Length: 123
Length: 292
Image (cartoon, rainbow over all chains, first blue to last red; front, side, top):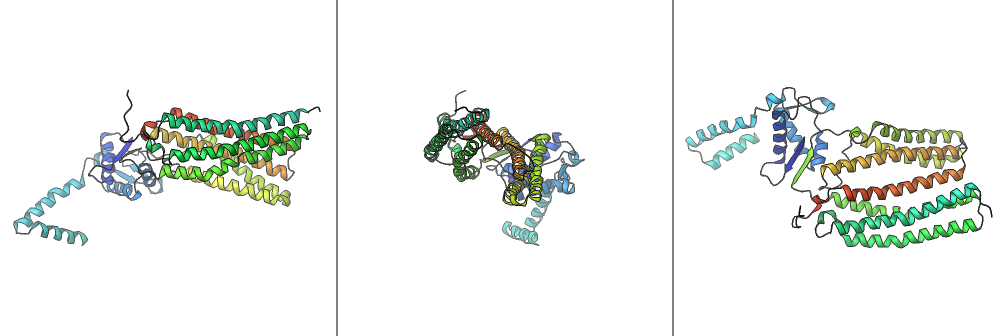
């Protein structure tokens, strides 16, 4: 399977990588237990920072689309196809929208909400 | 003057060594560059020339007189050797000295080749890049037999160097030289065996098929090099320690033939590359597109 990145797109590279792998798992192009290249290998091939690939792999591992088997490397999770349909990131948007609406309702300005969000994230 | 068969054989190999290493391969290499400049002009294919073409031409022209001088010098040596009815082992020794001198331009060109390879790798990568999502292993590029032969050849030369030193400590320097060279090659092989893509892309624009081909050629050459040179080193140290009896003249003839074949293989690979590689990826953004 060919994986490609486009630096001109607004999406960050790690997201482009994780989305393509997720899509390939969902469509069945990548079967369960298929081995994936190592972080360094893929980074060298795509000429990106290894941290970028590591970030994409972490994201997919968190969502149980891929799994790391110790020193053997990363593989497609045996339930990867099922898990690839769940987008944890997408769940954040409606929750945040609710909170922002509630904060606006009590009279907070957008910049106050942004500052509060940033301080909570720093937490 | 009646020349024996051994002298005739050495004279033939010596003559072909002069022809191949000083005249044929440099000429073919110059043809390769000339054809590349014509077929893929620098204005249209700027990504193919991270080093300015004028500089490439200048360096090529510097090497031409050197090759000619060394070739003519070697031809004079051969002529004098035959006229003076030199003994076969002496003629073979002179052939070997000439070989060492004839490959001198290769050593001189090495820093420049490294600089060129670095310039290729340092080019800014294109915005859109792709790769195959699969873990690469060495057996994807090279057959296990070739890998085994390469490792065996170098391992054998290490064992032979130790055995030769134990048998005859006077050959310490030759044993050390062979052992250190073999160890370096062996370490390099073990490294690429576990990290076949650790060597990186030859350049950021090369197509996926060409990258695979380039890696395959490189690894095949590396393991073949290990097997051949491991064999030569083993024979050399065992011969020096008098563990095997070899006619020195035939050993030197063998070395000369190996170098000639190596030279021909290198230029043939370059020529094949020019015919089979996808050069469209090196076209500049503003270059006119080819008509179908």
